[in-house]
Image 1 (cartoon, protein in one colour):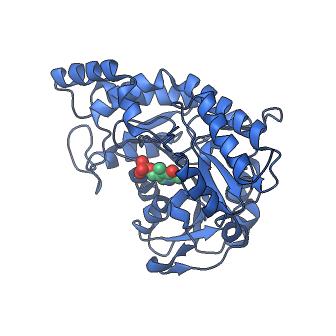
Image 2 (image 1 turned 90 degrees about the vertical axis):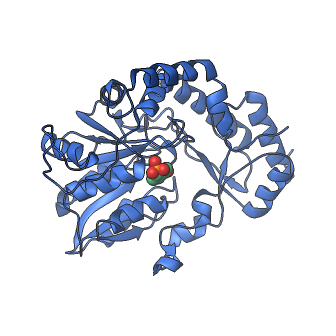
Length: 369
Ligand SMILES: *Cc1c(COP(=O)(O)O)cnc(C)c1O
């Protein structure tokens, strides 16, 4: 059996004729930039997430940079981020001239630890930029308490968070603004790059909408230094189609996660992601199925030799370990966990049999009957 971590070709081939038709229809209209497909998509995402406003942009990284810029994050500001997030989170802060401050993660789910956030707050701290990693929402009650106590801005990197919930409220709707990514391997992926900003603040919505398009207002006058970061209209067409299947996508991912959890839960060398269906606090969408595994590198090699692709997220480099960029210090949980983190295949192209083949191999590796 051959099970790649993510089969990019399938994203297109599975729905080839529909996607071809969308390409043909949109292109024949000449609707390439900021047309109906983009505003339709923005409406769909606002309705689904129960957010007031959405601005579709070129990618999830730009989305972060645009909201940080809109809220005037600048030189000498410190922005708290998670150690377990993509470099994009740190670089968005950096490109506003501010300083990203990585903090430690909690042992339960690998997401930013509220206690560690509070330890790093000082007079320069302007905002917290949390990451809802792996399709799981952060501990929002405690984070919102800290935001309030220290009067900080709160932003959400929800690149991996679309559809995930905390106490029935969607990731990306807790702070001033949030960002979601539509990179192909994301839970809602397009055939290229794409992203969106969510906010409930009308004033900043209006500002960010102009920042997306060269800082031009509806009359074409320049009112800000802006970006060119528009979601490609053809990609919006594809996303409108893929979004019709989103609820089923989430359901299927949760089914696969359940198989993994059932099959792997008695292996003492592994720690599995929490799966709190009953507790009704977190609703996880399993953008990734990330485990902690003893002998991680050997297990990875073994699975690869049997045709199974796995990934060590961020190439195993936490945002507190960016040696070449001049950031290098220790964080207790993060440093420990990064030695064992491993993502197993998790996507809607997998069959139950394939998932069970993977779990069988893992049991074999650890010599479990
Ligand atoms: C994918 C991802 C990003 C970046 O999104 P792009 O659309 O690729 O720019 C940022 N943060 C996290 C956590 C991600 O997984």
